[in-house]
Length: 200
Image 1: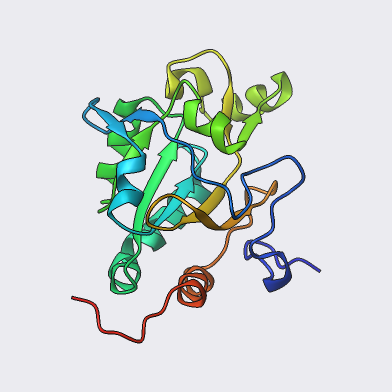
Image 2 (image 1 turned 180 degrees about the horizontal axis):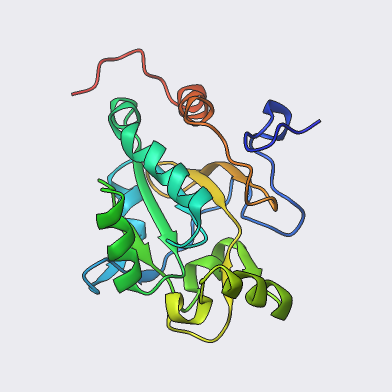
């Protein structure tokens, strides 16, 4: 039985049917915006080295914020393993900037309101009218967050991308409340890279 909130080991690295790009694929290229509104070619991050690419629902999502906060605190551990972190959502860049500042996120937080990268990675969740209305009851306005009228957000997902762009590992869960732990993600990186040599 699935433990609420934490991804069971048997489900780790599993993609629901129709969601996400599986390992072996090349990570798609896309031009997004950083928190200053400047254009960023996402592929430059994995040209520099391995990256954990995190798709989160938005700065309004407490589950996403908790996950990103934990990843922020663990950034030195990821860096010690030679792995960088990048987060992407449909939030317009002003909202992404607010999220980065509010949670003191020390890695890039990118904006993809036009769903370019979300579509390329097949991680779009389309909120229906009932879900939009439910979120509105909590003061969450998807159109205001993204600046668009599509009411689409990410399926929370994580991709480990090797230097050069090959996807090594992928995970997504239709249950947005269930996320891998930091320990699980660190173990995933260790299983796919040789850390026997000290890193500068």
